[in-house]
Length: 114
Image: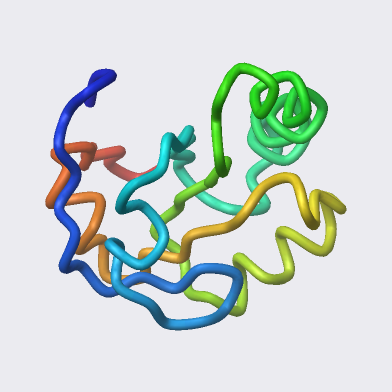
């Protein structure tokens, strides 16, 4: 996925625990999406997502409307992940439980016995 690529807008996703269509949160906005291999994994919890939380104000000053973290997890796990990291109001969590959105944008990866 690159800057300016079209994102499928008819995919069901859970944003901060609420079911929506991808168009409801992406259409007409400039967004940053960080895909992680899984919520609550050590590196994602300690480095990846905290860096987006720390840089949220800076990114928004550069014209980013919303910052999303997406993982192939259920909405309950993503809610717990958000609460653990304390990024409310800065980063929004996308739960893509069946990987439908992830597949649609071509970001699937076989991690074997990960």
